[in-house]
Length: 301
Length: 194
Image (tube, rainbow over all chains, first blue to last red; front, side):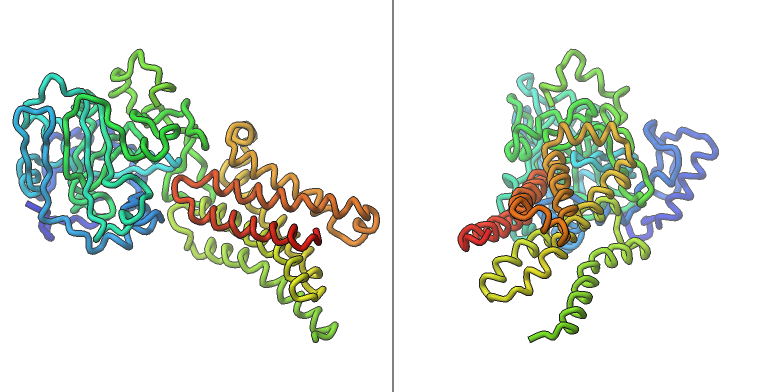
């Protein structure tokens, strides 16, 4: 069940609705206007003006499969096929299972989740995703006791993804999480953006978002979710092990070897916009800090 | 051959053309054409043009040796000063616009981040070259002038390495600049007319 054309909300109307919900001071669970649930989750930001514009979110992307320029994914992903598409859950599970994207959209209702995305390069956006917790999907399989990590594999399609013809990264894109990180409610399978279908350049048809980690951990165009025993090595870890670690939690106290992580620029600013101080765990410390208690986050970067 | 008057006009035209990148970026700023990260765009634009002028300046002496015309040397100083100009605008964008003169943050960056350290060093080394670029200083310094201005070799390499060290993954452009600069430097040594 894809979002029908009649359900697509123009950006202005979308913002007006959110303003209305906020003004009546409700913290909603399931109240719907039309057929798209708008749930003000606990992490929503103060005002609508804080949301990064749809234009910026969809034309400023790091998606090297389509080229390394920020504008390349927008330009080069127009003919990318996202249907039919299947996602398998396999590895250390009782019985491997696979779903089509349509099945996933029917079985797991999406809600609005406004999260901050912080790129390791030092910029950030506030993005109104549509999605549901990954844990809901993982609950569909019985996970073996040996499973300690979850590995994500993205699609390999060098014909449609010209960037994959060059070894800029080890294709297909691969990422991973510890199992408790994967089961955390904040870890989201994303199905849409601004109440509409997820654009190709943002990771269609399905991607993962882990808001307290640097953006490269949030893999796009996922085809496989694998439960594994050993810590997986992600594409960026392979590319530059001293610069990109497994955890990659947003942390102003742990700099990238070549540049600082103490501040960031919010995308969409102008010449007079100041830098913003980077927050520990991208501001989600209350929800996730306990996952890392006792861990040396400089060593486990 | 160009007459004296024509040479004068040509120099003025080339001077104005050398300012074109600044006119271009100002135009983009005024017309909000810079995209979602305007400060980064200005920083990259001015940084690139610093490197372009390094390449142009380094090409002057080899061109003189190949064509046996002195006119190239007449432009060498102007292009060299444009290196300093664009490097300074680049630095001011970073210090003033990006970090808004937060000297603690900036100082931290210079000490801890190697690409900023080498970039800043390149700019510092340009200062004595800019100050001693006029005829009077050439007369005063004589032999020492030539030696001092050989710093441009170090500055050029620092500039290229600065770019190489700051890109995330795609090394294509920085490597092209590095290759071109090394080739131009090799040219100088080959002709022994340093």
